Length: 151
Image 1 (spheres, helix red, strand yellow):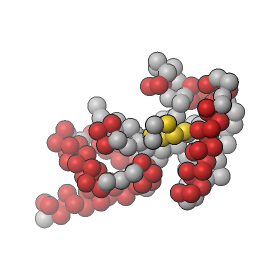
Image 2 (cartoon, rainbow, N blue to C red):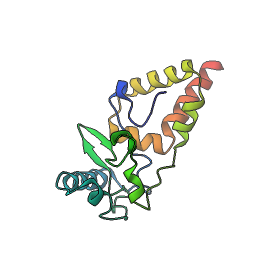
Image 3 (tube, rainbow, N blue to C red):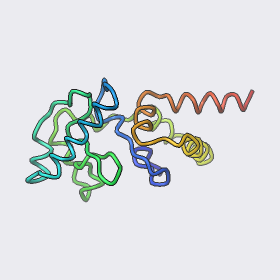
Image 4 (tube, rainbow, N blue to C red):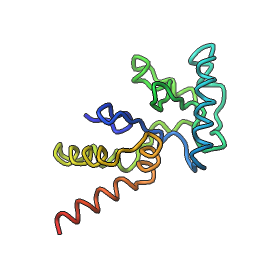
C-alpha cells in the first residue's frame, strides 16, 4: 500500500493534516524550524510531545519537525516500533485522513500509478505538495485531466 504522506519514490512528505488554518509559507517554515530545534534539544520524546497542545501561530502542529528534508511527526507509530506517542497530545487529529489520501486508497493500481506519475510531473517541493494535497487542489487537477482524456 502506497502512503501519500511520505512517498519515497517522489522524495516528498506531507504535513497537510498536521494543523489547520495555515497562514503563509514563511510563518509555517519558521514554526517548523522552531519545532525541530526544540526536538533536537528535547530531554525525551514524551517531554517533547507533551510540552504544548497549542497549534503554532502559523496553524501548524507544535510537534511537526523537519528532518532530512522531510516533514514528519516524531510521535508517529511508524517511527516508534508501533507505539503511538501522538496520544500524548490531546489535540492531535491523528485519525484525520485527507480526501486525496482516502480516495487514493480506493483506486486500482493503474489509477494510483497515473496519479503518482501526475505528481512526479508537477515537480513539487514538500511544502507545495502538503498545501495542495490538503486543499484538494492536486486531486481536482488530476480528476479534471482524467475527465478531459475521456471526453
